[in-house]
Structure formats: structure tokens, C-alpha cells
Length: 348
Image (cartoon, one colour):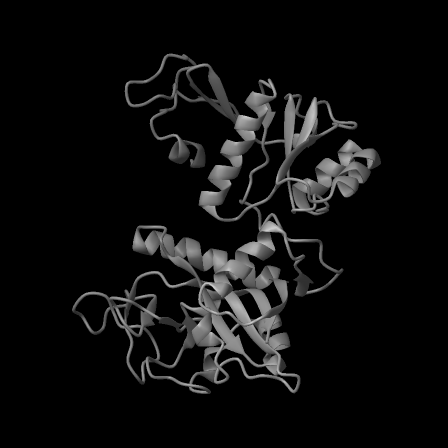
């Protein structure tokens, strides 16, 4: 199961706390709703249940940067803790990416609020920082929710009832805003007017299904990139709702295949050819999560990526194509589900 994938040196069986020869973890103890292993004096448990009922010293709430998220597990924690905790979160606002507050009605000693992440590397750092903060504060037990494993990203905000998609403006100076600004300004020095996070649960779920399939097929997890896509203002609503449509291939160029094109550098997508200015001179560009997977060199007229290996009839195809194998400046995908319009930048 997933627990054994994360702790491969801990084989199932005995409840003994003696470390196994294969690694630092003891053998796994399992019940119907809990798996446990030990590393030295540290006990690690994966539990199925209600985190608001936990009695650990610290309960972690994975929220947004302002600690006001009211959806999923975060909503359950805030509601169980009571209105005083919610007010405290609002008053604190953005003071730190991790902070302790009073537990309210929960049985823990403190609630640790932290900004949720979706990137595995950032999740790893966030958890490590949280554990170090707990140790520094002399707490001996902590309960984490399953960070980054939900249907949608932890930092998403509550959407309007029955909305299929919604754009949320980012506040300048937040970690999320600064991250996207840095990606854009790495190659493009034009002035950012606004950055919006695009929330579309259906498109996001489709991307995750395709991503898991790609990981199995390719045998590795290096399948996703953040790339840029310039567009005109009149297509924004459609892209936010339906995603990218490869049937429009050739509208601007199709030198490497009849798919949807994404640039490595924002400066490329910022040209008037791709980001057509509106009557006020404002331009629009998406920062996208694109499943590029294993790629090959593209060529004009392609409607799918070429097959892997030497067979021309193989069903095992590459996932995308590029303009240059040694140093790609653009990627082309042929399945709409392989790209998600994560952020929209309005600039001038």
C-alpha cells in the first residue's frame, strides 16, 4: 500500500520496535484504520479518521497564506475549533507562513497553521519546517492532514455555489504572487497589472488522472513543467472554463505539429503575435502546468507525437514534441487534458 511505498524498508508484520536490517524503520504494525512504524524514538502513524478528534500536542491546519481557507479539512478544523479561532486567524493575517494559535475547542495544545503546497519538494520542506518548529517549541506529538493529496490544491479558496470555474486575484507580496511574478520576470520585464489564480476542479482532476497515468507509463515522475501561453482577452473566459483547445492549432503557427503550444520563456509568449493587446494595450498570458512527459522533435503536420522505438505503428507514443531536443524553447501537446491554465497574468 501507499504506506509501504513511502517506508520501503519497513516490512509488514511484527509489532517489534527493533530496527530492521534493511533500513532505519521498524516493522509496520497495522490495524484496520492505522499503520505504524518507528525510527529510533520517533513513532510515525498513518491514521484514517477525524483529525479534529486527535489529542496530539499540535494539530496542523493546511490553509492559504492568510489562514482564512474554509474548505476541505481546513474548514473542518476551523469549525471544530470554534469562532474565536477563526477570528484570531483573520486578525493575524499574513504574518508568517507558519504560526501557532490557541486550540479553541480542539483537544490539542496548539493549532499550527501553514500555507498549503502542491509541489512535492515544497511539501517536503513545509513538513520538515513544521516538525522543527514543534521541536523548538518543546511539543512531542503532531498530527498532519494528508497535505497535497486532495482533489484540489490546498491553497484554493472556496468557490461560489455551482461555479465550474472562478478566478481569484492574488495579493501582491504574498508567497504565491511572488513565485509567479518571479517566473514571469525571469525573461519578461513588462509591467504586471494583475495575477489571478484559475480554479477549475474538473480540469484539475483531469490533469491529475493523466499525470498518474503518465508516471506509470514512463516509469518516472519528471513529467510536469510550468510553461507560458499567450492569448487574447476574448479567449480568456473560454480557456478558464474549458481549458486549451488544440483544434485552434495553426491560428498563430504550427511549425512543429497541430497541437497547443507552450513556451519555456514568458518573453516568447509576450510578443504581440501570441498575447494580442486589447484596446487599452493590456495583454494576457497564462502560467500553465503542462504534462510534457517524454518528448521528441516535432515537425509540421503532426497530429500526434511520434511512437517510441523504431516501430511506426506502436501505440506507445511520446507525450509531447519540442522545437529543439538539446535546448527546447517550446513544447507542443496534442491532448487538451495535458495542460492546466493555473494563473492568468494581465500585463502591459
